[in-house]
Amino acid sequence: MLNERSIAICYVGTMLMSKNKKIDQFIEGIIVSEKAMAILAKPTAQEEKRELAMAKYRLGVNLGKWAEARGIAASLGKWKPMKRIMKSIIADGFASLEDFGANRFLGRAYYKLPAPLGSKKKSLESLGEAYKKTIDAGQNVSRQGLNVLFLAETFISMKNKNDARKILTKFIAVNGETFNPARIPETKKEQADARDLLNSL
Image (cartoon, rainbow, N blue to C red; front, side, top):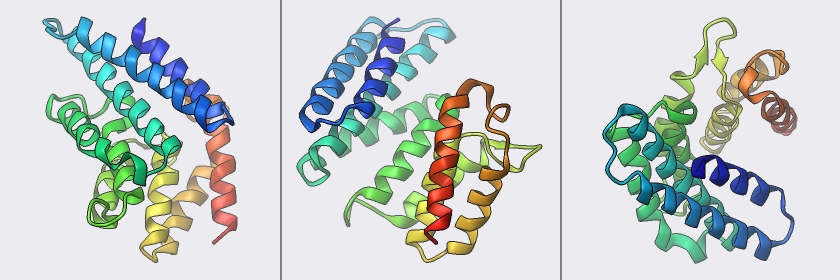
């Protein structure tokens, strides 16, 4: 239940307009995720281990959103714990969680962080992994819209607009109502963002 609450808190935070309200919302998400991690501190069953990995992931996401709301420069001190959390999820065998969310998180962070912490090459590696591992065989594009958008933006930052156009075009062409039944509203929003990004090239 705490993991579901953390997800909801984070989602609400992204919808808020006020910077201070966003920060407060993500702090609440961090607290809830930490409570979930404490409850699951000594997992035995595989499902408990997966729930712990999810709690770690939600903690990392809320920390990341909190850092974005505060400003990257003001939040650089949280990068090491965020990176450690995501790498531990991968090392523990839960890389596929949330459509390779840990890889996506790391790739996006490497894209946004200033040098020497940031790295477009590392961003490409992490996001490329998330993208490849979530490709829908029928449509030949990732089923996770954020994997598409973030990888496209990294391609663009590396002066590779052709590959960005390819994956954005493929993603826009899918039927948002049926492509990923678990993420219909999200997919439609991400398709709209993909159109805007493609039109900007």
